[in-house]
Length: 68
Image (cartoon, rainbow, N blue to C red; front, top):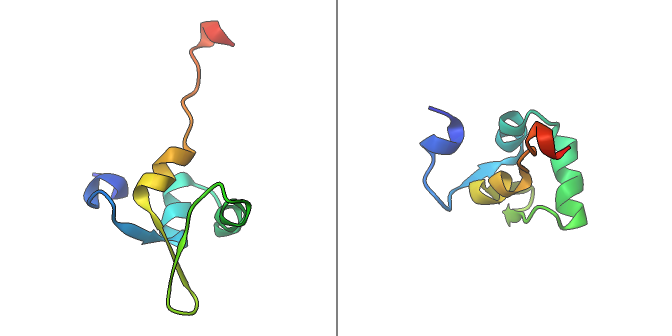
């Protein structure tokens, strides 16, 4: 079972966990947060959390080979 399936809908995860799920760096996610592409929420002074649903929305479907 993946991390996405293990969490309930609407739950929040850390940038590190999201980066691991997407196989990107935390810095990449921070850039997406800064650009407004990825909504993020602060919990306290330094802790940033993002919704799993928003992480899934970053993924785009790859078109079929005949549509390239």
